[in-house]
Image (cartoon, rainbow, N blue to C red; front, side, top):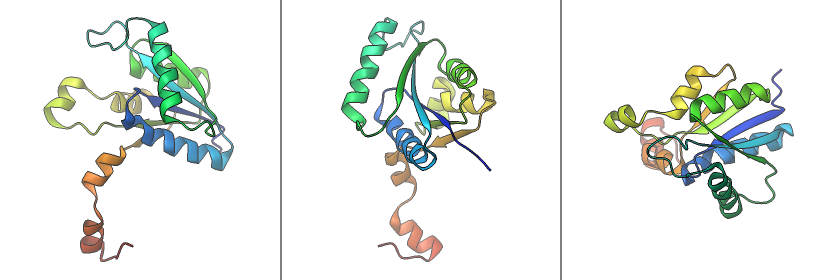
Length: 156
């Protein structure tokens, strides 16, 4: 039997990551799991959004206040470094049972140039990883008409 006592959900502080938070909070409710919300600030990168760990913590607090219901019990954590490496490291240190990470759904040249933190986490992690497509991406990929025509099912 699988016990999911501790979950790690990652965020890049974008609304795309809310899909992962939704999955983790639902799973956490079902299993009574402890949930960590991890943001990794890549302060050394040229495209870094935050100049310091303190700015990153402030941004995380604002994100949680704005987007996450107080009913969802989680522990916010901010780290600095390479996002994929820090996610893997944190997961191993805290012995999480599952990592939940949203994908941006980039393809082609954007994916090759920007890379994919989710893809790297899946490759590097010894912990199972659940990748979640953001709502906008799921709606773009699969529409009710597709379900009706391809699967011969009616949606209500």
